[in-house]
Length: 466
Picture 1: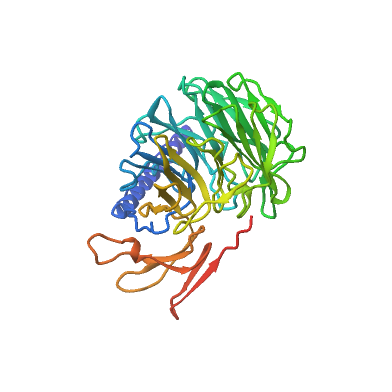
Picture 2 (picture 1 turned 45 degrees about the horizontal axis):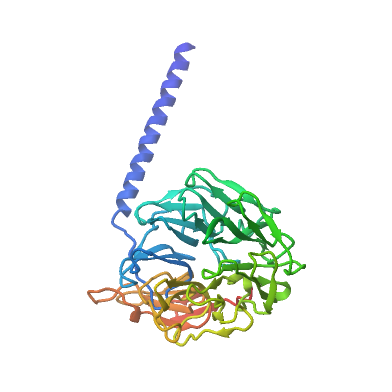
């Protein structure tokens, strides 16, 4: 009996051993078969893609870092002449914000997951840091936040960082609210929160006193049938002790449920705070406080439009002109009187749907804006725009191919950049260029389908109202 058991055990072990060896051999053969197949970029960049945030290195203004809604983080050393993707090997593709450490511009903090409420947005996997200008990255936690909207590093202490986490869009819970670290992101403390549907969408810091912070919470939820973009959890708060405790600001602010809020603090007079507030049925207004948030005055009924305030609402105060505001929108709105009146910024030869606006401290006429169609640069205060046409970050929904000779073509529906087609290869030594790509159908593309038998291409567009 004992010999039989021993024989069975030996047989069983040999079976496992040979099975593992066979699997390893199969995997090696598979790896060997596919080892010659490598991804190569075929574009396109002639319409680029959705930008979430842009930062200019204050120590070298030719260096830009770009957070892409659906394409990771990119870097240029020469003001957009050439680009390098920094996060292709990271486990995320969607980003919402990035911040350079004011004490060391080689330290980059990236919040993953887009900070808007659209149906097409991607989720993230927490907050990441690079300490070598984007060469290497470390995950610093908050992996269940899914959507991070803003990061502020204390200008006097790089170990103290505040993170606005909107939290999951399609479900409750997760890591949502305002998080603070005092050890460079090794540990995080939730310092501001509300209900399970409410996160924090914006924070600003008083440049004179790093202990004074303002934060906007945001209650929202999206499902297949509807989008609920506000609720009782939405509010504006102030802290005077580096975010440890918070007071809700009420005087002069709406008493009804609010939606997405964008905050701005005047760099010229930080006693002045501005808020773009969404109210019921896409209404809202611009509010201003001249006494550090103690009381507020409604300046106008202006609110972001387009597909809805949830997609924009970033409010930016000019670092050069007091009371000049920019409200991100499908066409950026600007005010020169603290929000009383607004005009539409010029956009000739420029894509719409603006999400970020960056200035240079030494040039009041310079502007760098991020849109659904990439990056544009102005040297004359938005009178004219120059398109950065070499950033291949278009968000494709679905693809199709044909059987064209000698090289097949690829067709795809894109987010806000039409339905496009282009070749898989060309005879030119410099490869595929922007002019090889073409537009098939305007608007938001979605689902192309090639009928190879009768050589007809069917295109389906996406109607996006919310």
